[in-house]
Length: 284
Image 1 (cartoon, helix red, strand yellow):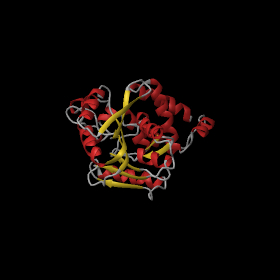
Image 2 (cartoon, rainbow, N blue to C red):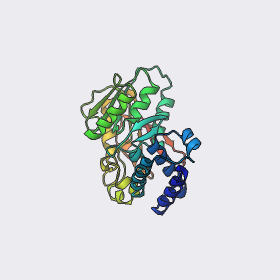
Image 3 (cartoon, helix red, strand yellow):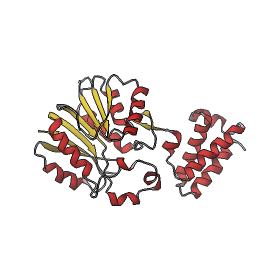
Image 4 (tube, rainbow, N blue to C red):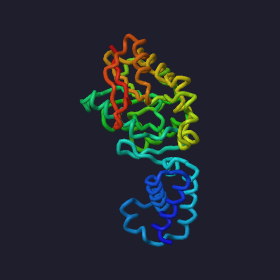
């Protein structure tokens, strides 16, 4: 069998496992390239070649893992975010395109790329927000926090991978606990799935991604409560808070903001589906 024939057969297996047809084909190709160590251009030039015998067992193992609905990013160990490659594992939430809205919004709100900003990324996970913002603001000093020590290790790996250890500190702590005041920018993608909705998530998320990065408490708003309360104290005057929230949570976010007289909700940014996704607040 040629490599292409292996991929076609694998696509059919993934479809039978419940993966959508379009995604099944993409996943099969990505896993073939991962097994071969090829980029996409080389793959298309050589996909009709007959692979070495070692390819069969390696590719079979990868496809079997995807059949069990293990996320593609965890199988390959990487995920792209803001045009950068990040190492990922089951210790962290897989970076998603929606979260890039936070990066874009921070850039829109703070157009001076040379500013010496003090930024804290709360619940950093893989470090995708911290690293992305560090590449955009070369004079910024960034603190990345996470309650998970395993996540902090992944974040440290991505910081080192991008040669940013001199400007990004990764700290094992909850939200802003122990963080000094006078922060210019706080960014966060906190857990916001209501506890009783966790079982409704796709199996790729429910069975593989860390619950601590998903579970937002009974109403899904516990993470926002902690984030708002601590940011109100530790943001500098006129400092900014940007955080992601889920579908149907805008009214809850607005209500919580009203409980903090020093914070003002100045904007709500929508995603590509026209759904409210990122809250932008400023300390009065």
